[in-house]
Amino acid sequence: MIEIRDLSVSFGGVRALDSLTMTLQDPVVGIIGPNGAGKTTLLNVFSGFVTPSSGSLRAFGTELLAMRPHQRARWGLRRSFQAEQVVDDLSVWDNVRVVLDSAPRGAGGDTRTQVAAALEFVGLAHQARVMGAALNAYERRMVELAKTVVGAPKIVLLDEPGAGLRDDEAARLREIILGIHPRFGATVLLIDHDVELIVATCTSTVVLDFGQLLVVGPTADVLQDARVKAAYLGIEEVE
Image (cartoon, rainbow, N blue to C red; front, side, top):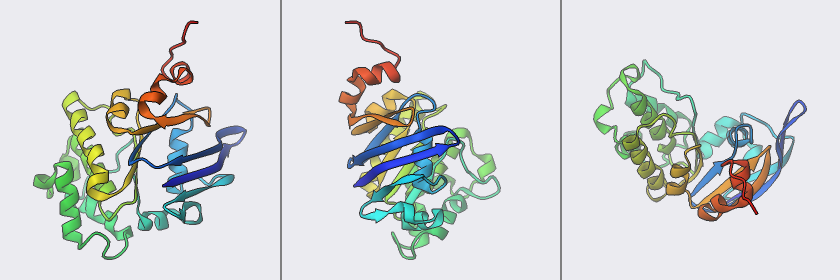
């Protein structure tokens, strides 16, 4: 369970997150909202890249705000970024293996077993020795996902993993996201503008607007909420 209480972040005079309070319990949680709503800022707070001015962020009984970024990685926080972080002059195997440098010793088994399991999960086992520079955009995205599931993750943060994918690639992405919790036990927080991806994968969804919580609940109910239709989907209901 993830508990967020009175979380606030300001950049100068801009309130990027405004007294955010919510409890997240589902295995895959969507985070949506218009541009500038505070979605990536929230992930940056989870990651330790942004320090909030107030509030708490507890995950499975641990206060994450008390940890530095490398400590959160060691604890089990994983993240993908909008701009993938694949190192061109490392092999696929080594791109994933280096994540284990920040993982607890012995967590999830030996290094070879863990890396092999992550690559098999995303469909890159046969490309383990291919250099990062030789990968296409979809394969690089899969390397990013492999990095999020290696080393006994507790929370996986995905920031727009579906951007730019073809229909068949997006279908495979949905399978992978849905498989993370059953296979690795991690809770997934997913930001994406693809509403179909959110509907297909997220049991519950959070909607942010101007740094504030607009609504949180079962995904189907959230997307039918009049406030969400107006703020995010651009649909004004006529009375």
